[in-house]
Length: 437
Image (cartoon, rainbow, N blue to C red; front, side, top):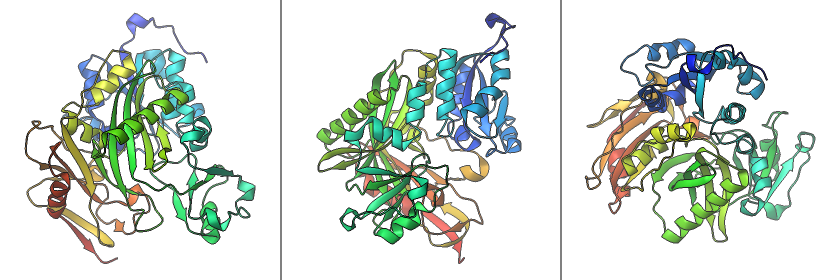
């Protein structure tokens, strides 16, 4: 690869390159403000999923966290072959000091580009493995469920013995729980495999029972600096799907179980070869030990970064910049507990969401997230925000994946307080106004 180096490095402004679409850039807008505070020019790469007019509107709004975002390059897709040629003009005009994938889509090109530029990053190997569940199973088989790859030509004829049901069908490269389905028998298995495209790798795995957790970690020079365990609840008990309905950071669990989850995650990060950055691993805790669902070389989704901010009192974005720039850093232990709880919704057409005594934010509509500000460690439990991830006019129904959820509340409380009660009270403050479909 060659790039224009006719302008000497001292004459090029120092910059940070963020890759991610508007939905995640807006959620982590503090990254842009943190870059500006360090006299770095914030640049962005987005895909065609981002409407440039909407992005331009928030960039030009002094009240928005993305105000000050400088040049934006739009690419047709997140393949390395599309992204790396597109960023060459930026590399010739700026001295890029850090590259960060904001969200899942650009993990691979960010990992490769950082290596090409000699910058801190996850590393190309880790970036590729963390975008493919089959590679994760291959790299850490003893932490994986029983699994089989089903080639495209064998999907219609693939069978399992009756005693291997229920099973779980997964696409190896998707995210947001898309395509992950529990099947109870052969007919459902064949139908689930038929949903995947010919360019997708399909996995059939054993159904793993046990509570679900994620482990967020901060890694620098291959060493895990900090780990935090987030507890999950899904809708798996109501049907064949695995949509996450709550996150609790830090999780309510026995110290020995917490240690087991952190130890497994640390070992898997070593196997995968993550060098620098924030990671998000998803696990089941079973009677036989910790089982890996997937490992991601990026920040967690939903409002988990805000949960850790409420829990520790410190935002995660400055630490992400430190890791991308190679600046020694650290992150504190939690001194509160926070939860994002999704609200059950009736089926029908969403008209409005209101909340008694709280402001409702519509990030999907307004491209704005509320300021979820940490409070004192001993402050009373309280509702910190109400988030709506859908649009007025959307049809609400079965929550097959994360995109089907509607509204959620964010609450926090002292570590020894009753967070379940705080979440229940917060949910009771929210009303979804829905017309019959």
